[in-house]
Amino acid sequence: PAEWLRSGRDVGSAWHRAVRESTRKTQNASRQAYTSRVLPLPVLSWVSAVTGAPVPESATSDESGAQDFLESGVVLCELANRIRPGAVASIERKSFPFAKRQNVENFLAFAQSLGLKGNEVFRAEELIDGTDMARVFVCIA
Image 1: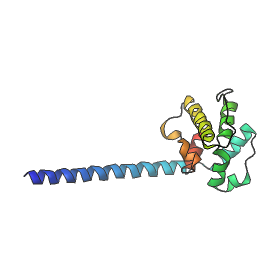
Image 2 (image 1 turned 90 degrees about the vertical axis):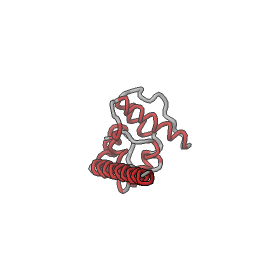
Image 3 (image 1 turned 90 degrees about the horizontal axis):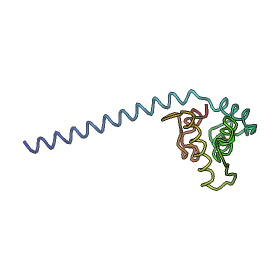
Image 4 (image 1 turned 180 degrees about the horizontal axis):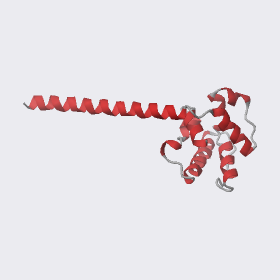
């Protein structure tokens, strides 16, 4: 009987792992379906109109170009300051990785101060590494 109970526990653990994995896949698919509806060109055009920063042609043709345009966080901080003057006290204009991260995190703090939560806000590395640009566009939109 003890062996049977141990066996049953293992089956239960396997079942729980399968349920967690299935739930994770469903959540990811749902998020992808939502974020795929946000197109980068209108978002980038709006950012350009508000900030006055010209959108490079490469940014309109693929996600890596859009990432290059946004990853320093400078344009995002300028956007925040145009929406709410003084929202970002200082913008780092150096191209060091820590400066980029600081700018992006300042923008994210601004976005959260507007009430954005959870999946509405991207993580800094998703923009800096370009791993989930759709999520970045959802946050900006």
